[in-house]
Length: 513
Ligand code: XMP
Image (cartoon, rainbow, N blue to C red; front, side, top):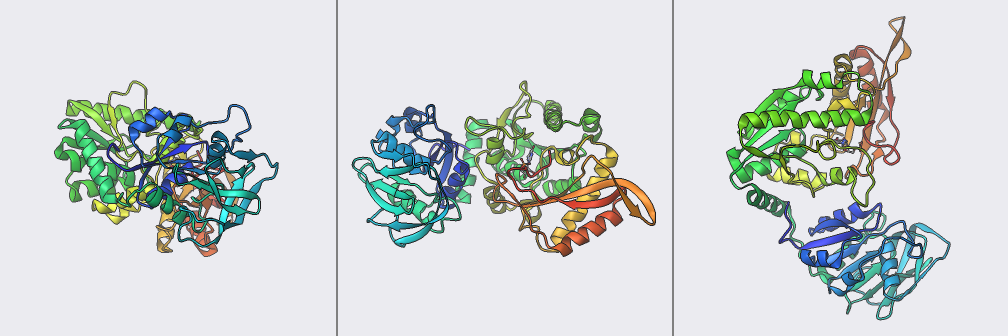
């Protein structure tokens, strides 16, 4: 999505766990926000003409060599700046204040006392609970700044210079544990940066459609459809921009959930009248995956095969230069950026072969999942696709530990359908981020019908999450687990045991591979 003319807040990432969350919260305030690396130069920022800049927290200390710094010229641009945690310490250090290495850490909830009139705390209570997570602390604000608030272990817990338009908070306004955090951010955004809360799903759609028209004109586009909300919304946006010049290609790689292929075909052919090619590529994917057990190899093989199928279909269509993908912001971040470590290769980003023939169109590249859902609803997409739980591009292949075979796929697909049915029946489907079955690469002993069995276990994974960057295991009522377990063991052949995964992300990930 091109953001040329949009009022933007740039979040400079100093390696914070919370950088994405800051961008999220700014967008929750209906102001567009994007994350940029910490070594971005003032010149580049100036070209973007942001309405404000937020410096994220980070694990570093301003006293350690080679820790990330801010180009000092950024503070001369006259653009309002808010430093959070390490961001505030950096401002203090670079502008001539004193940051103290106390040797004491402050983690958790604490009480903030506001002591002076302040733009950031305008119309907010004088005492409030905030979330701290820091080691060093600001002892003296830089010349020209006033300290506006303190906390038990932070003598300068907030500071500002309205003249310089620079603000700092030692605590984290972006986390839920700071109840007034969103109001503090709003004061920065609306008062200091003079942003209007105008970034809505309609503006997201208009921006995306304009950008696509600008980029592709009346050329032909191909779109990979997976059945999930991301590629469906991406396809609808592109369809809005180029109409019949769009052809969707739905590659059934044989790694989909039960009945998924039928549902996708119905939605796109009957309800949206979009050109659709359904490629049954099951045999070819399974042949490539034969004997492969390494998770990253599976992902790369599947990612590459997808592109090869697209290329073949595109060749048949003639003169197609562009490929649409439903890549989201967390996919981009998790596939590794300068400031974020690579976790796994998401097939729609890092798995793309270097010699790919297409130019990519990724209209959702800067959005989070819930924003995509809002756009989907606005575009008239059906509830069951809008609210479909996320499903990885490599499909069931990365939920089968070890080799992917037809027999193992059948087991997992049937178990997974039961998990979904029971979650829906309990009215939990929309409330949880994902619930699914995993097939581990072991067998265990059981006793079924008075006979010894030696069969597969199924692991049930159910997590709550806001954006998949972090996740917690769902405290599932025992009755539902019991129902799932009974049904899976009774109804799915070759299964004699069910276990429940109680790990959070981090340190685990949501998927098992
Ligand atoms: P992890 O396992 O990394 O998953 O915690 C985070 C979220 O991303 C989904 N996921 C993928 N989505 N292509 C996708 O489109 C992929 O290769 C992929 N791998 C994981 C996963 O289901 C979860 O929602």
